[in-house]
Length: 122
Image (cartoon, rainbow, N blue to C red):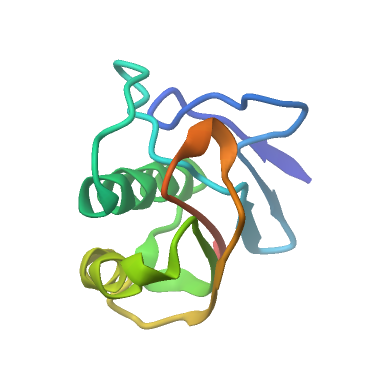
């Protein structure tokens, strides 16, 4: 097992790793929309979805893979009314249309609007 760590994605805010690579698979932790350079969280679902996708992409890149190799994502929304706007941004990054679950949850860390985790081939 190889731990994945990159300064191009936010550091863990708890006892977990940004990701792991094992047996040719990459597993990312859920990525919330924190800008890793500034520590800021953008306003609105579109901007937050974009930053979450960029954070997932940075971890994939650090692991030596990319969005085209993503097999499965799990997406968490604070409000299912944001589903359409979230999908519009998500579709720009996950162009291979991986399998996905998308659920609404009561709340997310730092009261963000979305979180994305991914499983990819190396």
